[in-house]
Image (tube, rainbow, N blue to C red; front, top):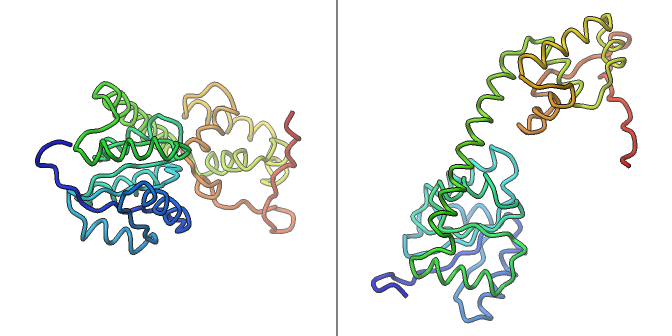
Length: 244
């Protein structure tokens, strides 16, 4: 252990209390005094009570930009050191945690022995991450964030009708369905799709839809729920073909 590094508490934090309790029990079985916490009280404690000598083992899906940034906010507001476990593969989301000050990130399928080993390193004031690996992941996060911002700006440049068409495509509607539902000519819809591709700087209709899914935007955020011109009911998506 690094001389002068105090040994504080270990708080296990997950939105699923059973996970916190199971991991806490497993760590106590290894002689580590770990406490499980339910989500809201645990977050409050992490932010307002824990100190730099304490460690939070945080389980988080890190699904989507908003979720990642919410977790970043938690890490930066707390004085504790964070060991984050997630199902996300090593990449930009890991870099986001490291950029916000987390000591380490691990796959949540890591063995108990691996978690204990990482915890001991964090407790000693060290990290299982080399500086090269940490820097690479942080750069990957900021590169992803810049690309994400650029895509959001391109989405914002679409006209209301283009956003509507893109939302329908992202919801699974085919061109014919959009023509019928919006009561416009097929050439008009295809013109909108060409404009969407140009503004998003993508090479295909599929790539345009992929932008929506990459940003994690609900279809209704891209465009208001379209109405069937014939009866006023929401326009349904086309049935999807079974996957091969």
